[in-house]
Image (cartoon, rainbow, N blue to C red; front, top):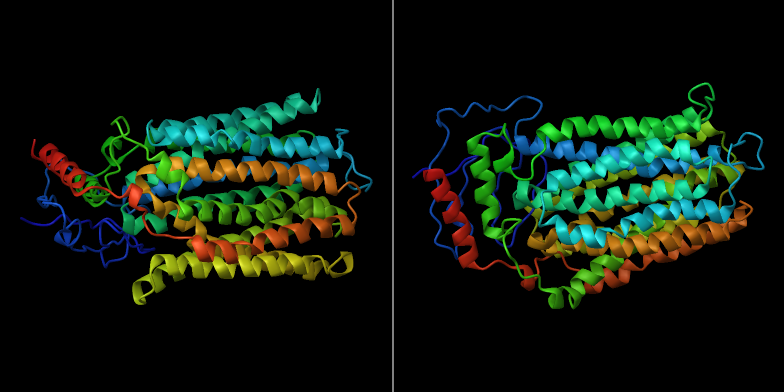
Length: 523
């Protein structure tokens, strides 16, 4: 029999699998690679599918823009993260022109105290705490509708906030809580969709494309929000920021609903050849059907040192990023004294550096994985160690600059984000690799812990920065710099990117999964 082939792919990244040894070809390739199907899942008695190149009635053909449907799914999920990022980042700039400030250039409509502003910002992380619940369900219910639910929450929160915020800041707290709940819906469901749509060799590429939406959304909204802040003639300035964010959520949803799908078999436009290719490649991982009964190894999960090392490193990575993403416009207003429009533009520069860094470092990690003898854990620890060290040093350097040296301060922020991007092939990739069948649970647990620290971070920062002077901000950056450096020790010792024993599939499960697919094709 002929082997299953996939001619519908484009070059990007590659990753190894403990269960399915990877194809030597690059993923998303447009050529016609041969799949050495007998090389993986050797422990299983697997029959090879017939070639489906000449399948009659298979009208789906690759396009120049989207050579495969899974690449389209990655692009759509990227757009969903753009909508989410716009909603989570818009408050960073909007807040500086919503509220009153001693500087004349910032005369807001709302008279909120520092503690109230801190609660508004922390409410988003409070909503993200729901991820511990949504993570449990992400592997059980339809991921398409969880993503749609997140987009609806983004729309409702952004549309309601400008109307309700004038009455009480508690309405703004509720709206930001809804945005956090949207994140709790989108993040676990996206990771679960990745494990069902992308073979192991393509997941690094998928993660890079999809999560890049966060930086794209932030890059768009920061300068746009800075411009709208100064345009009182456009819906009174700052309310236009939230109405624009709501519009983006709706537009993305209109594309996601008809084209998104929980798995390849539910996508109406996918070719049979590509569907069989995906299903055969992921069968070895025994991810299982969403409605199939499964036993979650809670005891092993809780006792996994590799998991907790990854979560700890993720917290230390996210803590300074919260300062960069949520408080950077405030710092540039208070210490560097930038005008609103300039503030929005300059605040976006470090985000651009983060996007470039994570993309290039993921590509470099893949090249090293393919052309050296280094294992996945070694590479993850290497990139994560460099990331944490450089991030910490650059954050400490920020405290040396003031208004007169604002250019150097901006360079230090950009350097910090360049190093932070190396966490993508570091701890972020490591966490995804630990347990593919329980990706939603791992994501929910990880970001549940991150959300708690995010709440404390925002409240503590607003408590420390009462007058906006340089000494107060310096203390904030000292704390962030110390936290950023901790994974150099802890993740290097206890971290891992290898699939854990408690999530490893049995050969019986793999064989049953593949035979079930073959029976379906035969009929």
